[in-house]
Image (cartoon, rainbow over the protein chains, first blue to last red):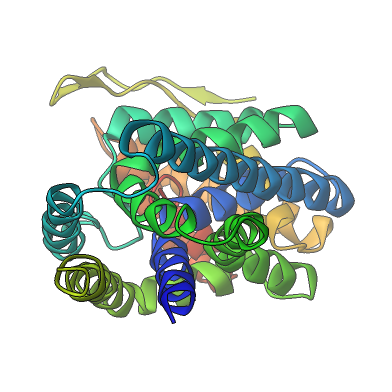
Amino acid sequence: MNDLIDLFIVIFAGLVHGMLQLGISALVLLYHASLGSNIKRKTKELTLNFILGFSLFTGLAISSICFFILVIFGGIMPAAGVMVLFMVLSVLAFFVWFVYYRKKSEGTELWIPRSFAKFITARAQKTDDNVEAFSLGMLIACAEAPFAAALMIAAGNSIVNMPQGLQIISVLVYVIISAAPMWIAQMLINRGKTVVEVQKWRVRNKDFFKIMTGVGFITLAVFLLAFKIMGKS
Amino acid sequence: MKKISLRRKKQAGKTVKGFSTLSLKRDIMREGRVLNRHVGAMELIADKVAKEVEKWVLERGEVTKADVDRVTAARIRKYDADVAYLYRNRGKIV
């Protein structure tokens, strides 16, 4: 039963991570920049490497978090730590609702500083090599950390409580789920959808994503409170 | 290639630089390539739009980059709404 609860936390945290928009925004940006100057096949390779870079960084980050939880807390995060996590997730939900998207923007401009957004745009335009695309993916995964770190800690805390065989699978499950929207976007574009169609769909549904991501953060926080604090006391 | 130099204008700490029909055409062609549009058709559109925007700029003493982008997107929209959407939303994705 406990393993099932832990697995649910990992899957749910991965889902909420997947709903964060920086990764998919950067992927659309890379498509836009690359299709304007490269052939389609090259663009496919670049976007594939971008997603792999994103996934690798996420996988390494969550593995490191598991390691630190093992070393610092001996594998079981104290109730006070989980309580802090609960509060951070709750606060992040409000951040997602009120500051994640820029209010004045008619597009999908995000909370990141404009200078950094310009840097990402410039990097995407200059990316014409697989290694650069891979690094850009890693950079984006790192830039998403202010929102994703709490999710990864929640997932990591559950992963360390699982049997060893399930731990690696859980890390993979988290990585796959968190990168799933990018895989789907890549598949859609490779099958004939245009960047405009994907971007218009994102703009149309951005309020829905904002609400659902916030609700996801709150739900995960409540779940942690119920099963990791109250359930253990 | 004709290059129109505009009076520099300080606006919120940013300087508006010269306007070039060549770079405008290049930008429109690039957006067309993103959507896999026919090169010949895009060249025609880019030529027409560049001329229209150039005329619009010449009628004014000072213009900002945002003005040029807005007018360009509106002109492209007459020929291809998707290319216009891409052009208007450059820099508004992240």
